[in-house]
Length: 302
Image (cartoon, rainbow, N blue to C red):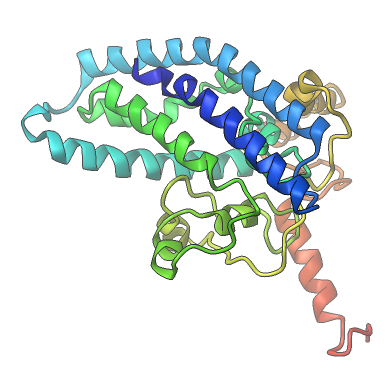
């Protein structure tokens, strides 16, 4: 039952989407766009369907590891197990999420979630159909290996996703200061979805923003972000969006037989190219810093 928590939340998702759309319409704010939202819903439904396979693979793997290889029996301290599992899951999500931005083969799945030029509750539903191709559930294998029951692992995976739903909105500006310091919030996650150079590849948090503060990836919200991708996918077709980056990877690989280039196109950062025709986030930042240094205080280039 635990792996299906998201299914029980679907009616809540739909109701809140309608409420947000109505508020946006009444306030004459352009936070919600019909075709874009329908695309997000389509991708979300596809994720639920494909997710059955992914969850089945994860269930079999986690239980096999837990039953045959777990390093400890933690049943006697159940409350400590739950506390440990929460922090273990959230820390794992942080690194899995960060790697999904820094390694292209994982970005090929995660790009789907960032493909909307709008930031709203519908965008939270914009999820991948291809995570099973890279066996992303294996990032969490160390938790049942240490003795945490697989259903506890699944519980926190699902509740983390549920928590992250509400932070996909522009209607909530700031939470109380203490909450902003510890927890992931709409303000923090808007930065994560921003395509402005200063916002790229920051705020990877799932539930707690403390991991970004600890590992140096935190960025506070300043100017309102622009959303989407640095190179937008000009389509409302869920199928095209779901497989877009995989198609681009195949195209890149078809143009080279060099082992280093193949590694770069698969395991390098998004934007890496053997001929320098594209730019990674690090290169974008370096170029932006160079332009800033060459610009005088009055905004005129020296």
